Image 1 (cartoon, rainbow, N blue to C red):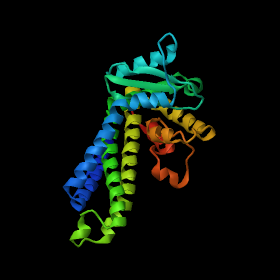
Image 2 (image 1 turned 180 degrees about the horizontal axis):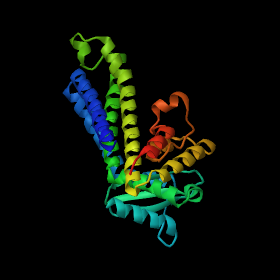
Image 3 (image 1 turned 135 degrees about the vertical axis):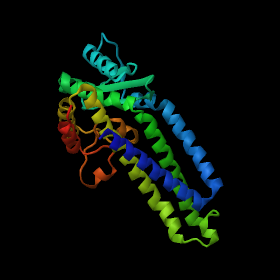
Length: 285
């Protein structure tokens, strides 16, 4: 299953790249290069400073072993099993039930858990959650999400230019060489939507992979499965208030912090909790 999810990520990144190449053939090299440089610079900044930004958004406090002995012990134990340097440990002063990992890589990482999750979960469940987050770090998911966001960002930026081109008659793309106006419409409207769906699919694929990797670290999927059920219930009873900041960082959480349902799931950064629980409980060790 792990290989399947890795393969799925490669395919989805390939689809994003294919969309970008199609745009390049439509728009020409100069416009694509400008958008590419702009988006890469934007995401380069996000990659290097996203951990500090995310931790600041949720007012996470860096804690020592003396301040949070149980959480600290579990993070140390799980990171040792994963054979990665121990991440920094943070506690978010909130009663919502959630956790996330962040950082540039294995040597610059952090795990943050809310006070609510520490109060609601038993040791096995908390260990399952931490194993999931440590797996994100080990699997380089932050880098993969940055690459996906960069490509999707380029597509979205060029689509914005294309919309202005449609208003003012184009900027030298295929429309001036006899191209169809339908192509411009697809470029301006449909491609950023498709890119977003693919990027979210990559995020969901990495969540499945982190579930599997975390369960394999502990040789037990039931702790995480039980935790996910509690976390989903908590998100429905006490959802996070959507803001521009929380919506931007929601993909980092172990479960979606917002109350979902209906068509919202299509644009969710997380797979359905029921399917995640089913997969975890069906794993053999």
